[in-house]
Image (cartoon, rainbow, N blue to C red; front, side, top):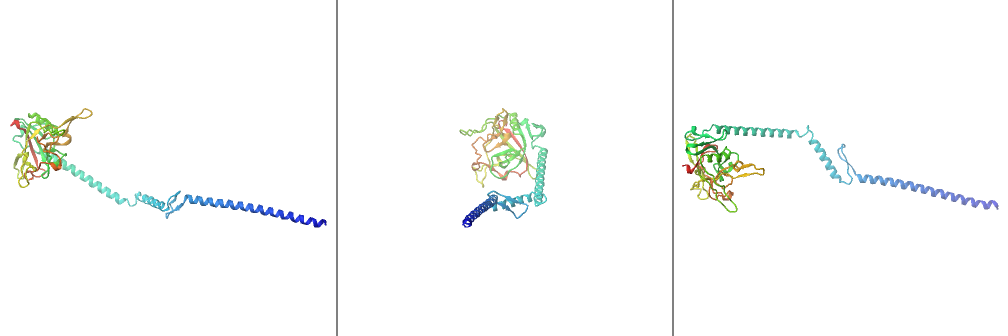
Length: 337
């Protein structure tokens, strides 16, 4: 009886121990699996957030946090191309050669222009004014081509024909200023022309006033004559007005020259903010106008617009000698006649 009663109690204890062992093992396995899952998920998340992109070129590996793969590849290829182009031994050589050729062409053009300019200046310096007696001329400046002819009360200047066709705003301009709208260019400082006219007795008035209302230019009237040599070497002479077609008042088949005389307005003068004096014609190049300008030394005492659609005067082409012809311009106050 005693043995029989002990056996059941022993079996129950063994069963309970086995259950505890199994439960412990399951818990351990669960924890291990859980740790593995956490580790794996963490690795996946890291790879997904960085998106490592391998390009076709093993030299470049792009890591972009949340970028587009195609954009990464485009950027990589662009980087490669830039490096290729920046290589001095690569395809840039033909461009370098072309740039060098262009530079040489540009430098040659500059030399040719400089030589042409020197030739023109030398030709003008050799040109003897076409007046009766040159020994009576008094040159006002050692370089500028301007003289006084005191006996007759005239100013003598040399210039060059630069325009034979088209509308006009000026008869004469300072060289390298408004040749596209002037018949003659003059390589003389404008303020010297003003001083010369004063020296022969001309009195300047006032430049044109446009606002608030038009007030015509004023001053002593000045005759402007031109002398030149034709293709046969013969000296020709005419008034400057004969070279100017009054296209507002005559037709192409019956051209009439400008009749209005110029008046000695004297260019506008002003002071800058620092108190320095300025003579406007020195800056604008406007010498003898056929449109009204406050900068002109000689202007016409009628209202004459500078607007392209309102220009009154044009080149009288048939009467103007060839482009490049050297001319002598004689300015004489009409009161000296």
